[in-house]
Each structure stands twice: as structure tokens, then as C-alpha cells.
Length: 179
Length: 89
Image (cartoon, rainbow over all chains, first blue to last red; front, side):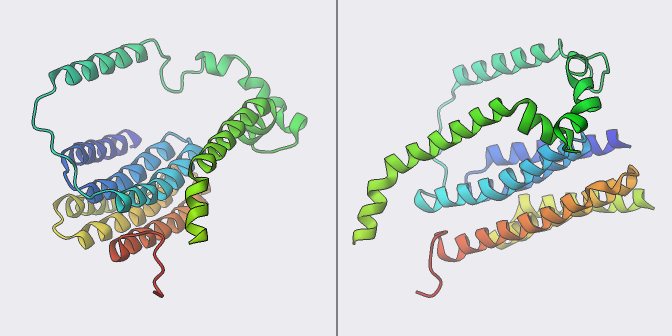
């Protein structure tokens, strides 16, 4: 049953991806990317990764569509047409793509209980995390406690990026306020 | 029963996709994106009952909110060509 759903949804995604890459009007392309994000959110839900699906819907379909539109209102609506053939770029893309596919051959099957990711610390999280951390959701306790320093690092990176944007844009905003 | 509903949703998704790809006007595409968001919500709801685990219905509800805000932003962009525009002016 889920296999059929996977096939139907993935063929929708392929049609959309081809359509987006061939589209000259960037507003239409931004809209199509919104649909693409909804489809990938469904795919994540089908794979039982509900938290990832949630992020994909909020960031992909929600915020990034708005950000793309904001960019379009500052630039232009039409893509610059490139006439000349770029065989080198196609070659690089093909080589990178086949290298990535070759890399997936080593990976364990989807849902394989013997996969390394299920062997290492997962059992301890499943058995003891509720007692140790006192949070019923295992994903939350891993993110907020077992990998707390990792999450702190991520927050630091985002904070630094925010400071960078304010430093770069701050004097422009201040000038606009004074006028 | 749920399988029939799922097939119906997939067919509607395909039709919305056709409208989004063919156009011809901007509003056809906005409507199709909005409709696709609604179909996503229905899909997740039906999928929950189809697999016997309707735990993720609240996720579908959040999708409705995201879809609504996204459509508002798109319509504001089409009308004023600027996301920060003040409609009063």
C-alpha cells in the first residue's frame, strides 16, 4: 500500500522538479517549490519522520516561499536566459550524482534492525531516557539533554549569523529610520 | 473505504498539479498551491486512519495554519509587489 503511495508521490515530485527547472517565470517557480515542499513533507510522514515533516512544512512550504517572494520583490520576476550549452557543468553534475548514488550502496537497508544506528546507543535511549531525563518524547530528550552541547552549538551558529546580518544591515536600517 | 478516499485525494492532487503546471493566469497557480496544501492535510489525515495510527491528526491541523499564512503572503505579494507594504497608504 505505502509502496504505491511512494511511487505516485515521487512521480508527482519528478514532474514538478522538471517543470521548475524549465520555468522562466520565477514567481511561478517559487509557487511550484511550495507544492514540492508539501510533497516532501508527505514523504517524511510516510517514512514516520513526523518531526522532520513538521519542519519541512513550516520552513519549506511556509517561510521559504515567503522569503523567495520577498527576494523577487527586490529583484526581477524573469530568469536570465542562458543560450550556450554548458557541457562541463552537466559532466560535473553527472559525476557528483553518480558518486552520491555509489555512496548509498554501502548504506544498510531501510528499517534494518542490524544497522549501526540501531546498535549503538538507541536501546539505552528507548529504555532509560524517560527515567533519566523525565521527558516522555525520546527525540526531545536526545536533542535537549543527551546532545545538549550539540544543540547549544547550533544555536550559537544561528545567533552568530543573526549578529552578522545586523552588523551588515544595521546602518542601512538606521539611515531609513532617521529620514 | 479509506483506500477509496486515498485514491480520490491522489486524483485531486494530480488535477491540482495539472492546473499549477498549465496556468494560464497567476491566480490559477495560487489557487492550485492553496488546494494542494489542503490536499496534503487530507492526505495526512486519511493516511493516519489507513495505517491504523491516527496520532498525527494534530500535525494536519498545523499544516492548515501554515498553508493559510503562506497564501496570505503570496496574495499580498501579488497585490502590492512588496511584502512590507502598508495597505492603508
